[in-house]
Length: 265
Image (cartoon, rainbow, N blue to C red):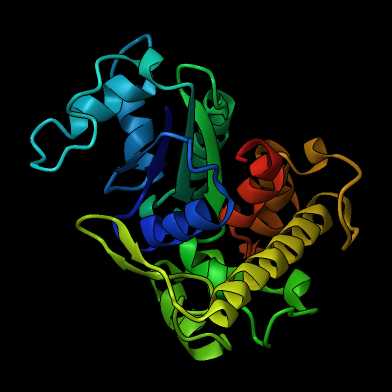
């Protein structure tokens, strides 16, 4: 069984369930969990004890009172073969930028292997709304150059609304019932294929941009390790965050797809 942990309750599950339908083998057992808070809260919980608990224990303790707790029947970390976490950079949640970045680096050091006690962390820059930040219809050939100020916080959503060609997620998602997480698959094959095509274009755009962030080459990387989550963050910090108080807009869902697409079949 595979566990996917998302920061939010709406956008991320909607995106993921569409990806699951398009790319995952039907035999894969998937469990979805919404953390309902930011990465800095997760960091705080991990550091409440001298020896951090595994991520499943942390999640079970946090969600114990939730009526719809998806981990209610889960006993231990070993119930999952892989764990993936998706959180936003969203640095405005911490007043001290240096502290925020130090915490992010420590989290990436902890969450660097999907089969470990902690799982693997993917980060959106600055937040999940970056998935629809394209000023032109896909493929947006200028995407590699788009940045945003790190102090915008939630106002990045307004920036995406005003500047993006896409005003919602309909171009890459199916309709979903968020209570049951059931999808309404379009009957029109053309729409289904268009959504799949858009994901392939987003994959290309974000992978090439990740490589641009890390190597200054707007092209596919020579190998996956060139655009690891750790290298992306270190280069964001060195080239954008520290000198310019910006981040290069980047979404982790296409990066996850790039890294694990062949393993999900």
